[in-house]
Image (cartoon, rainbow, N blue to C red; front, side):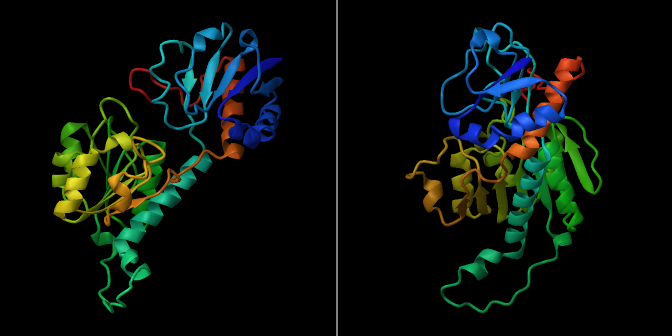
Length: 310
């Protein structure tokens, strides 16, 4: 009988206490899952870090692997006490939610819907927006989430460019990689979607130089990680008119402090990190499959590369 420690905020256990054991049972594994397991008896950890400090994984002498519930692992990947395999969460619910958020906000900005939803002066401007095929969109990050979003936008008719660290090929998407590729991907883009992982290399990817490469009045969507954006450069680009609007779902500090200038800026939409959520039902199936693989000695799904940080 294997024992899994559910190491996540208490409210998360209420969401997983039934669906996770059920998924493990369907995978044919005899295991017990609990938020309370003696350190020496922990075989695996289902990990969803809260607001506490770094976890000391060395206190679990028989730990075999850690299964993260989140897509991003930047808070744990550098933990020197974690020497066992670490997996990140990639599941259908996470992917579908991100596609819906990104597609919805891209269409919102493409169609200029804000001017019609909030129109106190009752302006009758019946200028129609361009067709999607005339609105260049760039997606930075072509992994599981970014690739799905880029594909969905291409299906809607947008000319989509994408950028990733390593070369990718996606149907309907003009894919770039490398430093020169990033310049090409951003050049004259009218809507930019950030879905890169947060690593030392991606910190402040969108800075003053990058904002200047975009089409005048471009829109930025950041459902990825807050640290991908230089906040001061973003505010300057908005104030100068180089950037027309920013819809932000992730921030360097969360919850976003009430006195942060993003809240009051007329060209910023703040959403409270709701672009996509790990759904317990679909995430439990992924954890269960990785547990089965670990017990069978098979390669784990979505194994984190410690050098790359994701």
